[in-house]
Amino acid sequence: MKKLLSILFAAMVVVTSCEPVYKAANFQETANQHRVIAVLPPKVIIEIKSAKEAEAIKNQEKIESERFQNALVSYLNENHTKNTIFVKAQNTEETNKILADNNITSFAGKSYQELAKLLGVDAVVSSRVSLAKPLTNGEAFFTSLLTGYAAPSKITTVDLSLTDTNSGKMFWNYNWQTGGTFISTEKLTNSLMKAAAYKFPYKTKDLK
Image 1 (cartoon, rainbow, N blue to C red):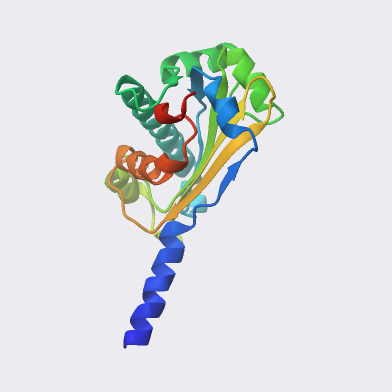
Image 2: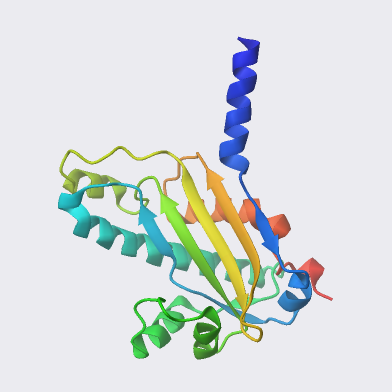
């Protein structure tokens, strides 16, 4: 029994601690030059397969993307106000309006440097979120689905990257996986950033 518990504990650590980080050699020096960044709408994938409800799933992914973008901007600006993060995040409304005014509905074929220059910021945050289930109006979403879709795993994955405007290069990346259950996008974002906090390049204490 003791051996079994040890194996289960080790498996749990793998699920919740798979957090590889990429840092460019000059990542902190690059970050210290930034003052305003923009959070791009993330790519959200809900791990539910249902051909009959493909459109509903696509619409839900868009809702989750907007919520995650707003939650991340709020987190960054709240910590900027507290002086724990030295960069300010561009308002979601401004970011999305600039993208819409330039007819950008997909990032395919566009570089993050190009998008950063268009948004007039020092860096952009790009992200990919894989959800085991919807976090926004999830119960209503599930009741609208027909039966027959594959049951999702309970693992949520978030991949977060920062790209510098001047160089056009990604200088920081964080991949986070968890088997935890979340009731809102805000709680997911807070858990993500709490896990990433000691590796995040915009901490005021690191500004020189």
